[in-house]
Image (cartoon, rainbow, N blue to C red):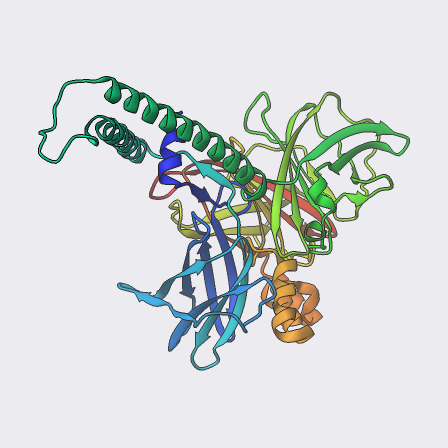
Length: 499
């Protein structure tokens, strides 16, 4: 009640935004013209609010870098003037800027790198209020104190007016209580009590409306696993009525409507975690279905990446219990479906056929971009060519062990390729869309010879920002010799320094 009373007088709430789950960062690594760049955008804590943008120029010396917020159609007609990014003292390759996001929805941040061979890149960003934070005790105390002062002052003024207002001009005010004083104070207290009660009811209604219409809520969903004539199936049903609205229509990302991930919550040894990466297909009667892989019994977290026509992206979550192992051979519903029963989580894992996958990182600090380098080697420790998997060299999944952080990461970062392409088409037509495909690492958009040259090194790099310290589970997926191979790793991120 104290917090509601404070809110009635202060009308101040803070809305916090995440990208994926548990992280406010959107990361992109690619090119702005001839300049290779790594762009990190921290979405604002309030809407309207400031987005914090850093641009690291990996090679070359630009003359200037500007940033500009655009609506989800990449329309420059109503855009403000670009802001100039400022070079960081002591690190001339790192530029930073802040942009105001004035509305909820999807934005594109245009980063323009000026100089010889310079160019522009559009990075899609969600601007959504996802969480409501409680008011701090200091501010609550100040507002409650001011409220008590105002209420007391009002009652005192009414009581004094009732008893003293009829005195003649030459009569000195008296301090004794009278019936008029009592009646005035009683009336003022009743009026103020009614106003406070009405204000509390009004604020509760406004807060409920805010929760329902302003705060972002992931689409409600139901996940079931059942045995059918075609084998064990997993069904994702979007039960939220909002999923039928125009803005929520799904568009393919990497050629798939839905990327669904299964991660084992716990197991007896704690170091071996089951994993699945599925692509459910629409089925009659609604929902999206895929063949369930032969994972061992246990509790699994479910994450499903969705890209909407409105330009918004979201990851919806759920949890399932697997009570028995699948029998018989597995027939995946999609050629790109894959799973891993789980091996010991360590820096270098065996992939079979004499192949190994090693995860190499530099120093890691929460909130600072870092590269996750995955190296595929043969028995002689020589690089092994990587074949395209879902149009790129590899995919990675980052999950904090408690499930509070989840991200589906690509060589181009954490942005949605589908939304990036739509923005580029809006800004530059189909040619712009093709350029965005290339910039996001879509190997199907480059000549075969170029794709082959990129895969020969047996290495794929994923840029990522760990939002907080803790223990993280990382899965890296690559296709080698026609098979999707999955390596599982355990990474401890300290508050600062190297893991």
